[in-house]
Amino acid sequence: MGAGHTSHGVGSGPGLPDPSLAPLYLLVFIGGVVYAALLWRQRQLGREWPLGRSLMFALGILLVAYGLSPALMAAGHADLRVHMTQHMLLGMFAPLALVLGQPLTLLLRSLPVSAARRLTGLLHAAPLRWLMHPLVALTLNVGGMYLLYLTPLYAAMLESGWLHLLAHFHIIAAGFLYSSVVAGVDPSPLRAPFAWRLGTLLAGAALHAVLGKLMFAGLYPRGTGQAPEVIEAAARRMYYWGDLAEALLACMLFWSWLKARDRERIKAQRQAAAAL
Amino acid sequence: MTVSAASAQPSPTLTPAQLSRNAWIGVLLGIGLVAAIDEIGLHQLLAWHHFYDKSTPKVGLFSDGVFHAAQMIALIAGAFMTADMLQARAFSGRMLAAGVVTGMGAFQLWDGTINHKVLAIHQIRYGVEILPYDLTWNVVALALLLTGVTLWRRGLADPAAHQPQ
Image (tube, rainbow over all chains, first blue to last red; front, side, top):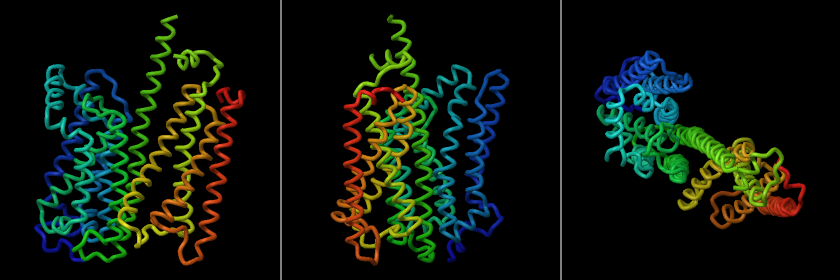
C-alpha cells in the first residue's frame, strides 16, 4: 500500500483530475474533436464515411477517456489489479478500436489534394517508416511492458509526475502503433507483408503471455507494497485479457486477408472470362 | 488457372491439392481445439493444471508462451481459411474433419510426451499417481492420430470425396 502518496500530485485522491496527465487529456480531447470536425467536412463535401468506422473511433476515445479517468487512475495506483485493467484498456482495446476508426484515411480524404500529398510524403519519410517496421513496433510495445513491470520503473512511475505521464503516453501510443502495424486497415505502402504482420502478432502474443507468467512467478512489479495475491491476480488478468485482445487483432488481420483473397479470386475469374 | 476456371462453373470437382488444403486447415483447427479444451476444461473447470508450475524452467515458460500464442492464432487462422474455402467453393467437410482429428491427436501426443515428460513444463494433475493419467492421455492421443490419418488417406482415395460440400 501507500503507492503514490508522496508523489507530486500523482494519485491525488479519487475524483480529482490528475494534473500530471493534463497533456494526455488534452491530446485525447483534440483527437476526438478533430475526428468529429473531419466527419463534418466529409458531410459538407457530400462524401460517405461508413458509420461503423466513426462508432469504432468514438468507442476508442471513450475507452481511453475511461482508462485515464481520475477515479480509475486513483484506484489503479492503490491496486495493481485495477492498474492492469487500465493497462488493457489503454494499451490494447482502445488502440484496436481507434485503428478500426481509420483516422488517417479520414484525414487524407478531407484535406485538399496538395496538402494530402504533402502529408503523405511526411508520413512516408524516415521516422514513421522506421516506426512502422514490425520489429520496431513490437519492441516499443512489448519492450515497454517488460521494462515497466520487471524493473523498478513501475515503482518510480508512481512517484514521479512526468514519468507517470510518459508511461501512460507510451502505453497508448505503442499500443496504437502495434495494432496498426499488425491489423491496420488504413491503406499504406508502409504496411508490412502479411507474413511479417502475422509473425509480429505471434511474437507479441507469446511475449505478452510470458510476461504474465513471469510477473506471476516472480511477483513483479516489485517495490509497490502490493500483496502477493494481488500481484498474482493482476498477472492472471494480464494473461487472459491480453489473450482476448490478441485474438481480436488476429481476427482483424485474417479478416483483411479473407477480403483480399476474395478480391483476387474475382479478378482471376474476370481475367479467365475475358480470355475466353 | 484450373481453380478459377472451375469455380466459375456450377459443379466442379476438387483437385487433390484442394482436398489436402482442407485437411491441413483441419489440422490447424484441431491443434487450436485441443488447446482450447485444455485451457477451458483442465485449467478453468477442473483446475487440474496450474496457471504456473513453480518448478517450470525458464525455457519451458518461453516455449509455453509461444505455443499458447500459436494455438490461439491457429484456431482463428483455421476459421478464416475455412471461410475462404467456402467462398472459393472448394470446401470439403470430410477432409476438414479428417484434418481436425489428426491435428488433435498429433498435438495431444506432442503435449503428453514432449511437454509433460521431456520439458516437464507441467503435469496433467497434481497430488495423484500420474501414470494412469499419462497413459490415458497418450493412448487417446494415439487413437485420435491414427483415426485422423486413416480418414485422411481414405478421403484422398475416394472419388466421392472430390465433390465440394
